[in-house]
Image 1 (spheres, rainbow, N blue to C red):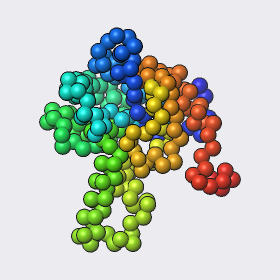
Image 2: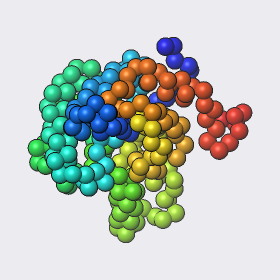
Image 3: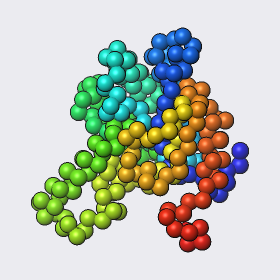
Length: 240
């Protein structure tokens, strides 16, 4: 596919439908999560091929801890496996790996792997791959409020200086542009506490395809949807 001149710089994705995919095939839910990892590889490859600059994936939300303990443990083991087996290939392809979210409840093993992955890839100049792990949009905003409150309290910042742009800079994605395109698979039509501030003007694309079935065709359809949109940011087309 030849991309329209209007193609997204930053894509954010909720990878939904692993469990539904597994249920349809009479398989345990973890089978769906494992196959979903292959779809992550496909998504990264598509972004590299189409020169997408930033990809943010919602891997585990602050609400996901309420799932059955067996599934949570399985997901954590899958994260460990993915971080161990994928990092060298990502590094070879100049992918810069970042993580956003509350790491306090994560195991020491995962924390150490995160540190290793971010340190190893921090100078890479290709795709920026952001993994939202134990992340929630409300958590992100609360942490931003705490940070700015401490700055004001210690006289590092005056209240008059707190603008929308400054608030954006203090979020976990503060040095990145906001997502141009949001994709959610599996037919759900909500953003589910993901990047609440950052998605204010993103184009929202919902597909019935379950995440394990996500492929280049689905990706291309999302890009075509984005290219068809007029991004006005509240203004008129002529003024953008």
